[in-house]
Image 1 (cartoon, rainbow, N blue to C red):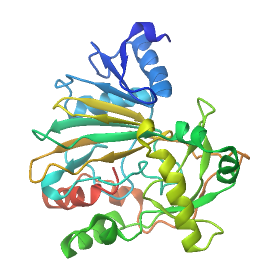
Image 2: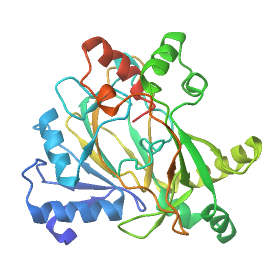
Image 3: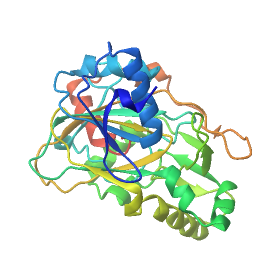
Image 4: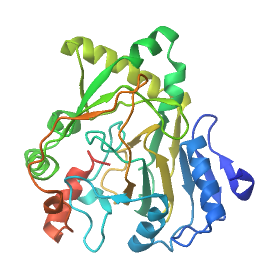
Length: 318
């Protein structure tokens, strides 16, 4: 499908485009949706202003056009929805760390769709980074090294140190976010199943590189991450209520900037089921965990109290 069908405006030179004059819904025309899907593969992140007509049900209906929906593995969904994860700043929902969504799962989401509900007067922007371009920026020798690296991803890590939380936040994290421990070995470089691009699979769920002592692993991860987050590979979006952002979760990382103090910020996310990553040499990611609870036990709508607790831990998941 041609971009000519869309009123499309690139936001930066390497990542991100705004699409105007499209009303998102589950009834979006086939040709228009096809053009949007192709644009996402090219630009990695797409932005749509003025989608105030979308409620929770409408967001889920639009998301179903992309594929099967998947709830977060451990954090309860928003009450009254099947799949929505809510991040509410009042309850601690602030995802201020570079990450790709849910990489501790073997087949992590292929795409995420985020809708702004309540937006601060100033601050609260989100930044995305292009992990395909980051790979291309690596010197050839570093590309060769990265092609052969594997990393352990997990939802069980030093949450308190990373997010500077209090004891109550740490307790909620342990009770909800790590109610089931996930550990997955992913290649550091995966081959994108639709574009064939090589992308870096990194972010805050990485615990260590396999086969390396902890200090060496930390140094290598810091080096590789520096290519992902360099400003040339990023796009920053200033939210307005009703905005929708869609990103290719196989080719991006993102960071929600926590610079808005006690102002209120609420965003809601739905994710599209993904595929198991494949390395440059054709090996598939490996899941190491044995689930502690059945999925149906942890993917139920939240009560009001549970939803508030879930929102405070959802920051590490979004």
